[in-house]
Image (cartoon, rainbow, N blue to C red; front, side, top):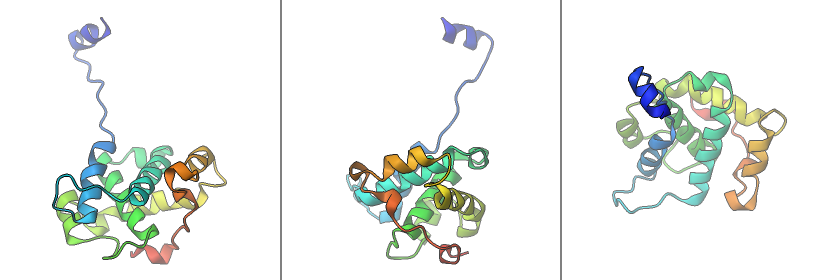
Length: 149
């Protein structure tokens, strides 16, 4: 019933989220050509953690979902010190974003990552410090100068 009313009034209730983008971006990050290739669980959980702390505050919510997803992948690569550096040509190709395009969003999510344990984001921090999620919230947060900007 509600759907018919919304359709009759030509309301659009769809809002894109970053989640459809992260799986492709994570696969590109691992540079895996096999469609059945799986992302390492630690990396997967770190991206989800960063995405979750980055979606709660207001500032990243105003950005395009694809750039928020790309920034979460970038910051996860820095945090976990992934071989090949934080951003590769493959990632640039598949995301459509250069390293400089991501700078503002990465810095924004990084500031929330730094404050996650002591802020209103504590519930997300507590969730991701559990063994089930590989304790990714307990990983050392990279210094600002390590972000590569």
